[in-house]
Image 1 (cartoon, rainbow, N blue to C red):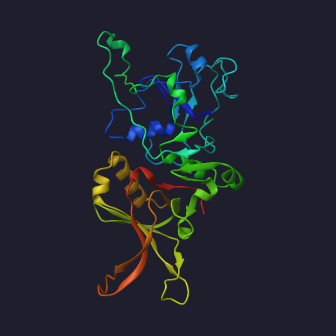
Image 2 (image 1 turned 120 degrees about the horizontal axis):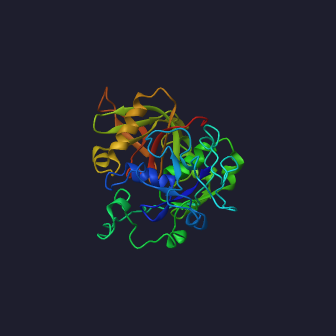
Image 3 (image 1 turned 60 degrees about the vertical axis):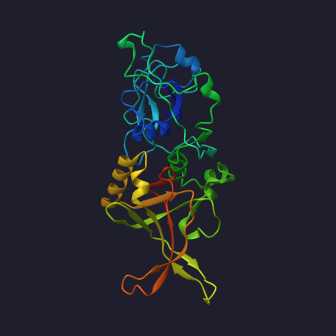
Length: 327
């Protein structure tokens, strides 16, 4: 069974798998999900068993992934009767599930809102009078937040601050158009169904402030910066033109933006993997809208040509990934 949340013993809080992935790659915090201990998010269920009754993770540390990341029951995981997280294939008795059970299928937990303020953690030093063998790899705490208080926090599955979560909902459920029409998403002051909030790059002129996405034609590697060219073009008519014509679309990632990114290593691994990949790749971003610009021609600098382009401003709201089934 896939879990939308899990209680992290070291953080004394409930996290989504996307929170865990975000922390794993964040170079400004010390966090390694392989050394953390995750338990059932159901308070009653968790308190009924020893701390060794844990959950596992799937795709928590893979920078590039295709199958949906999640928490899952281990062969030894137990749940109390009536716990909503009991899997029919992994019952409370701890019977091992079939190979690969829970490792497939789309994301089922749609956040209703993408919070633009990132969820942050403040580590507290361990109590000096606690035995070293109880410290479980230098536990940390979220400042001012207890496990009981965490239930009211603005976090997944209802809300998330991790861009990858709504993107995964859209990508993994892309074939279910009716579901994407039903599920609402709010970002900032804008609310729309997932199916409308994710706007194909060729229709970026239809509405601003959405999550734009498109198939990647090429990623230009300038060694310390990158430009991503989209395969689709925007049809646009300028004031002095008689009819619409196609314009290329691209986004630019500056050296300064990348160097200052808290997940710089993971990002560079991700984009260099994308450059070397022979798979169909897609780009998703939020917070900026490409606009028509006049760019000097390489062959003749005195001449210019039009292109819809923008500099990405926040890599937390930018993803390049493989997305089978998207079209």
